[in-house]
Amino acid sequence: MKSADTHITSFAELLPALNQAPANPTHIHLMGICGTGMASLAGMLKSQGYRVTGSDQNVYPPMSDFLRGLDIPVMEGYRPENLQPSPDLVIVGNVITRLNPEAIELSRRKIAYLSMPQALRVFAMEGKRNVVVCGTHGKTTTTSIIAWILDNGRQDPGYMIGGIPVNFGLNFRVGKGPYFVIEGDEYDTAFFDKGPKFLHYSPFYAVITSIEFDHADIYRDLDHVVESFRKFIMLMPSEGVLIANGDDPVVMAEARNAACPVITYGFGQDCAWRAGVIGYEERLTRLEVLRDGKEAMTVETPLYGRHNLSNLLSAVVLSESLRIERGDLLQALRTFRGVKRRQEVKGERNGVLVLDDFAHHPTAVRETIQAVRERFKERRIVAVFEPRSNSSRRKVFQDAYAGAFDQADLIFVPDPPMPEKTPQEERFSSGELVESLHRRGLNAVYSPDTTILLEEILGRCRPGDVLLFMSNGSFDNLPAKLLGRLRG
Image (cartoon, rainbow, N blue to C red):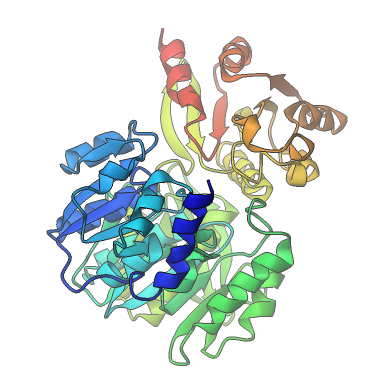
């Protein structure tokens, strides 16, 4: 173990000589290639003509199928021989630790390397006016809407998104236009760079949707999170534009320090752009948009829920700043089909509608349930929540989750998966959450695992129900399993 550490400390010694892209790489290897962002980067590099290979510990669908479809070889397991013959450049995913066998070999053989954010900047963002969407919530949907608007506006944008926009079918594109749109993640970059990813993205235009405490595995508290966003705001050039959620006091406190113009949006009276009258039809939401208190436009969108309309407003503000034709903007908003795993309809069987959502933070869970409640007023809302993220597996949000389910009629909560990854004294308790929900007068059911959970849901659901699954993972494929059983 001592020799491994000796090898790895050389990373710092090699900077900046090896922590940069060589002049003309032909073979690029990605360590941790099966992560959503890394697989998308691999596809982007492949589309640019590079020879791309990769390795990962867990190689399984859908990412394995995605990479196979791109004809990208993937080696299962991390081994020194995966770097033989030597690639011209290695891109290191943030799942890789300093004691990973390939990381040790990478250091020993002095092969050039980059983190994923560095690689994006070099191979996709150079020479562009970058649009960076940041925030604890809403990044994926907002980035997807903006990319779709720019595409409708014939701007041929490049983009990298943390989910799959239904309109595009892929979450990446190099693009030949002047803009690159990217989801700015505040999570750390790599084992040799513990700063947030979004500090690498050279923003010209930026959206900040929200700032809350999250990622309890790498941030101490809210102040620690704010420090990262403060550094990001300091990157904004004076000629850029920062679009800030005026309903979030933490965002506003930091946005005031920006060197560039700041434009606010939201529902509050003080927002420069704000939501007016909201109306719902069978398949569309109609939203009146006000600018400085006066009606600017009325938009129609399939999106619903206050959080989604807030995200949409930020995209409207950016579009106006970029002078996108109004007709192209309205057409894009009307035809935007959402993002997979964001209130995604998986199917309806025997009168039971199944939705799949990525919500995992207490605020996201609350807002998602509220949105579904508003959209399906006459139906029973059944919330099925998996505490799977690094933060939700910890008790840091134990009390906050208790107040997130008030708009649900029936709630199911299984035990967190991978309990061994969280120290015993820090673990979240699903049983305790269910007891807290009972004390609030809510109908909640605890299940120790997903096998029992599926049987509990089948035994209690009924025609007319809307089943909302929420997890930042696959949730053991429960939505599909449930639909299969209902069909049978």
